[in-house]
Amino acid sequence: MEASMTKRAAIKRQTRDMSREHGVLDSRQFMEDAKVRRLPTHAGWSPYPSNDDRDQAYLKTLKPKSDGQAELMTAIDHHNMVLALGPAGTGKTYLAVAKAVEALEAGKVGRIVLSRPAVEAGESIGFLPGDMEDKLAPYLRPLYDALSDRLSMKRVKALMAEGLIEIAPIGYMRGRTLNNAFIVVDEAQNCTYVQLKMLLTRLGWHSTMVVTGDPQQSDLLPGISGLSDIAERLAPVPEIAVVNLAERDIVRHPLVASMIGVL
Image 1 (spheres, rainbow, N blue to C red):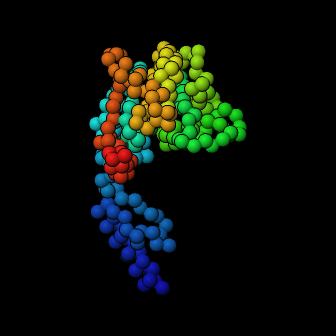
Image 2 (image 1 turned 90 degrees about the horizontal axis):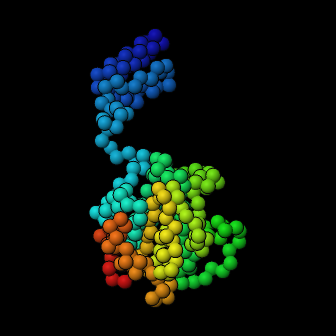
Image 3 (image 1 turned 30 degrees about the vertical axis):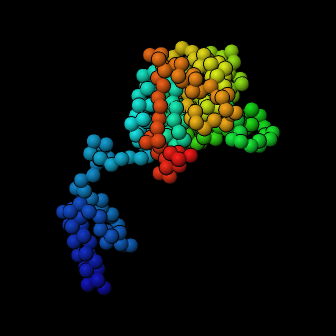
């Protein structure tokens, strides 16, 4: 019995010495009869970012994945009006919503206003039950997805209850002046020229508006979408940024870029 206890004590002592010397964990430190579990003191790891070169994904750092996305992010930082045009999968909506959340969290704006035309993609889904937000929820799902990726869904609901995140249907925007707000108009290719003119002129003091859309993917009848015409007229205005994303900026599955090129 005494010999067995002496042997275990020797093993513990040897393991402890090895851990101190090499700064590594050893499974033998976690034996059932171990009263003290020592951590390595010279493992070379530090919790400070300056000593850790790993990409901390949980920090949700917003980084562009293409030159076009970098141009879009820079445009949002330096202009109060930005039009982002490009094919599906280029991150237009996600970057716009992420920048809106970033501005709200930093205190640069007082609220986020999200707007999207309620246009079905070639089929009618009939009448929807509930209040205005419930009826618009299926159409605004992409915006909710981007919001929940940057914030928890619980936080999103809390901010919506406080009025800091507002869902504003395009039909209810007439006559409003949006001050101290970050406005995101998504799927603008499904807006007419008159609707877009009305939306763009809602911009108030200390506000930023980002309009996103793909002129080649409109669900309206040919010739009704006003996005291309609006973008062409606003491009020469120096205070307004019109960013054109291309197939090389697509960050979805590689097949998406291949399909966009032939469809």
